[in-house]
Structure formats: C-alpha cells, structure tokens
Image (cartoon, rainbow, N blue to C red; front, side):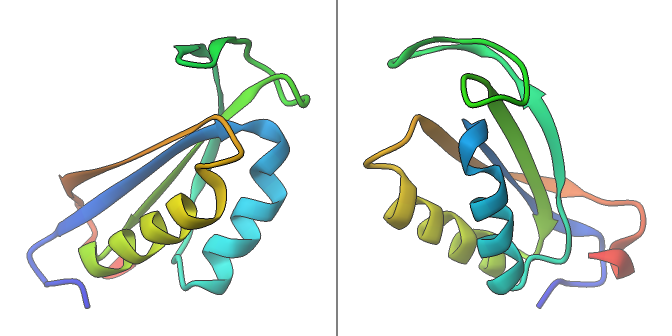
Length: 102
C-alpha cells in the first residue's frame, strides 16, 4: 500500500488509440485508483503516429498509485499488448500533494 509521505509511482502508457477502451477496462479491473487520458503523437520504431482519437492516433494514459500496483499494471500491459500493438510503458517516482487520494 502507499506510504503516508506522498511518494507514489506514475505509470505512463502511450499506445494506439484503438486500445483505449480495452486498456481502461483492464486498469480498472486490476485496481487502478483512477487515470488521465490525453491524445499523443510522436515517432518511434513503428513510424510517425498522428494525434487524434481515431484508430490512427495514440493516447497517453497516466496512473498515479503505489509502486507495487504500478508494477502489476505495467506487467499486465506488457504481457497482453506489447507483442501486437505500438506501445511504450514507463514508471516514474512522483511526490503527490494529497497522498490520501492515491
């Protein structure tokens, strides 16, 4: 469980927009306390990705939670999506101002 000092982990997932509904369902069922979704664009090993909410775009999903949960969520994402979809996932330590919310 999260500690009381405000240190949490930010899980960031950038993936194909077509995965948004399925990915958010997975995050909820695995215990994510909440998330933020925004559109994203960029270039990577699979070429240039445009912004937008259609199937050609990318989304950026961010979850702030305890490190143990962030690792669990990232392992699930890697296991179920990495092989077949353009996706990157990373963990960042963060300090939140209202730790009781996370």
